[in-house]
Length: 113
Image (cartoon, rainbow, N blue to C red):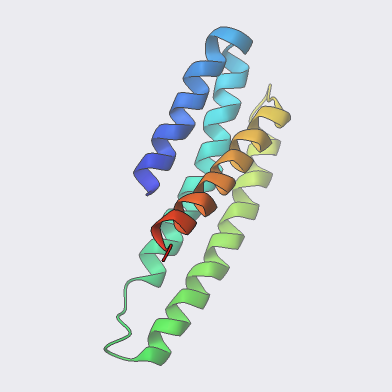
C-alpha cells in the first residue's frame, strides 16, 4: 500500500507542476513524504513480531509503532516548515490530507465484509 501512496503523491506533483510550478510540485512531494515515511516506520515496527509468538509483544509493537509514527510525523512537519523555502503550505497539507483519506478508504476497502 505504501508504494501506491508514493505513486499517488508523485502523480499529484506531476499534475501540479505544469499548472502551479515547481514550488507546488515540491510541496506536494514533501506532503507525500511526510505521510509515507512515518507509515513505513509503523509497518516496520508493528509487524516485526507475530501474535502467534506472543500476543502481548505484538500489541506492544503496534503501540510502539504508532508512537514512533506520530513522533516522526511531527518532526517531519516541523523540519519541512522550517527548512524548505519557498513552500506552498496549502499544497503540502492538501496532499497529506488526500493521502490520509486515500489510506483510510483503501483500508476500508480491503477489510470490507
